[in-house]
Image 1 (cartoon, rainbow, N blue to C red):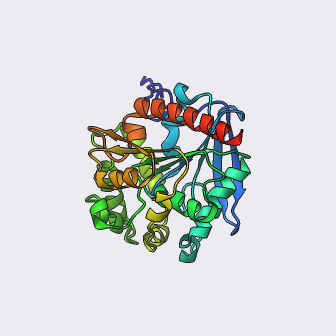
Image 2 (spheres, rainbow, N blue to C red):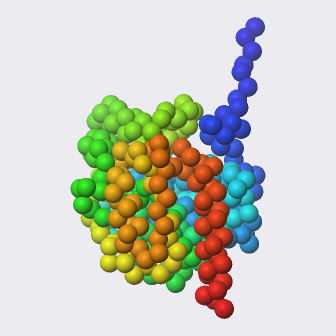
Image 3 (cartoon, one colour):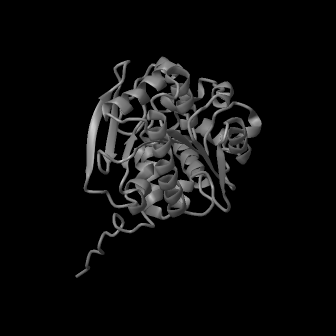
Length: 300
């Protein structure tokens, strides 16, 4: 008789991280009527941190943060932005174009959880979402920003070698779409990741309709003037071997923001928070503590 092997993937930190027991799930309505799936972890009184995922991903990509003992004292909030994960997927491309809709969505998440001056952590495309938020709401409601291999400008020199793949991910040919998505995900990492994690990320990616992916490509944005005036603490994290967003992008962001610090991860690709989770989590914990102290000093 064959014995079933125990399922350890939810407990093994090298695979998908375990789901913390103290999580709370909410559906938050945006100003334009989009339902957003959001989850909070940790004590409500902890320093708040809002994680914003990247192109074709979901809040699940932050599992190694929400399950981390190093971040256990913080109030961690993830959400699936519109068109992604368990959130609504409007078919009209106009629902993805303006700064106001993206800023309103992030603001709805912050307000929906009652967060005061959260640290925003934005990966890849989320650099644009943070820029949209700054353009509409400014910095009065946030305590700091962590840019993670993030995009804030349109110049070709700031991008890696995956743009063609990302265009193919918008194909309505299912076979072509899956092949491009699989290749893109592999190139997000400097070294192969555990198969269960890869499968989870691939499944999440394939939940995003081609027309939503196309809509995300349908807008241009440049936030340099906003970043020059940024008056909250900023940390810029970048994988040195990133093939999606060139390290030159992170260098540009860090040079533009007054007082920003650049943290370059040698030997790491597009996802330092997955590839070097322990280092990333320690840096985030320290940054959140410092940002909270700065916020308290400002409030005095």
